[in-house]
Structure formats: structure tokens, C-alpha cells
Length: 237
Image 1 (cartoon, rainbow, N blue to C red):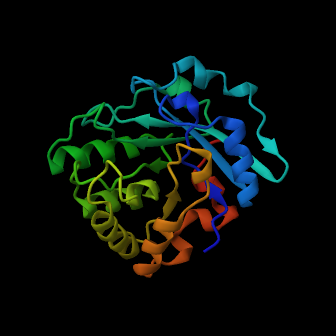
Image 2: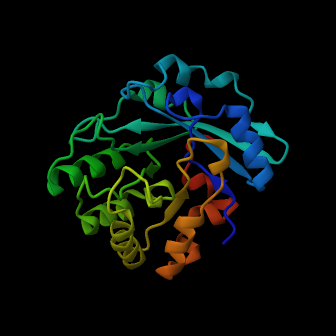
């Protein structure tokens, strides 16, 4: 499949990534992507940028030849009620928002607690993507999660990094199989993200693509194979 956008990427500003924004842009252009998303970790993560970093996105040019850059955030879900680590006054000024759970911020809870946290985060109208809902450390009710995504029109991520043999997240392959089967039943769209922390990973969807093919997942439900669907995952075009 031809993926035209990578909306889950990090730079050195996230503290544990290894490439600059300009290096990521160059890699995205080399891969022939049409859209690149900058989604630094939210400030609740100790190494994440200060809120002022996100407030200053206005200075970043958005067009680089044929490549369009979108400046967003991978916000941290901070509790089982789905609150995020930046309020709406800042989030509203960003191009888009991914919401994710990280063990350094939110201790894994029960299936009910984890699912509630994810669903409530998706209820935030500024959240377009639920990031890496695939970790066995956060067991979830995927039927409930996907039903909620269908109602809220939230896009669920198939995270290429989660499928890396050395990934810290556990059970991603099995959990994604379950999630994708539910997505097919309910007609819920997914987006493939690299979650790249180094420029060489930008636009490399190899593991996620293999899983999607393995499950016969319909291409019409994959947002980032269709440039016309960029509006499904950004708030500001």
C-alpha cells in the first residue's frame, strides 16, 4: 500500500529521540510523503517540551516543496477519566492531537479503567487519533473501544513501533489483530504511525503494513493511504 502521511513522529525536543525537525522533514521528502505530523510528547512526560514549545508552533513554516507539515502533540492521558496534560486553550491552537497512555504517567489499571480512560480521552473533540492502543500492560475491552471510536469518529492507530521485536509495549500483534477485527465489523478507520524517534524511521510502515495485509484489512479504512482524508486527523488544515 502507498502511505502518504506519517502523523506520529518525534524530534530531539521530546528528550529521548535523536533527530531534528529539519532531519525529519528531509527524510519525509526523500520518502515521497505528502504530509508529515510533528507530535512531540506532552509536558507531563519528564523529558517532554514545556507548554511554551507548543504555543510557539506559529513560527514553523508548514510547506516544504510538496510536503505539508502539521504541528501537533502526542498528549498524555493522565487519569482514568481521560484528562490530558494540556488544556484546551493550548490544544485548540495546534493542528492536531494524538492522545496516548504511557506507563510513566498513568499506572496501568483494570480493563474497565483503561478502557474508560481511552474512551473519555476520545470524547475530547480536539483528539483525532488514539495512539498505540495495543499494549497488554493496558488491557482493554476492544469491542467497547472500537464502538466508541465509531460513535466519536476517532481514528485508532496501528503503531509500527509497537511491532518492533524490542518494543517496550507488550502483546501488540495479538491486540492489534483483535482491534482490527472489531474495526472491520464497525467500519472504524485506522491510521498507521511510525512513532519514529529517529529520522530513518520516518515513513517506514513495514511491520504495520504486513499486519494489515495479514488480516486482509480494507484499504478504504486506512486513513493514510488517501491524501484526501487528511481532514480526518487534523483540526487545522
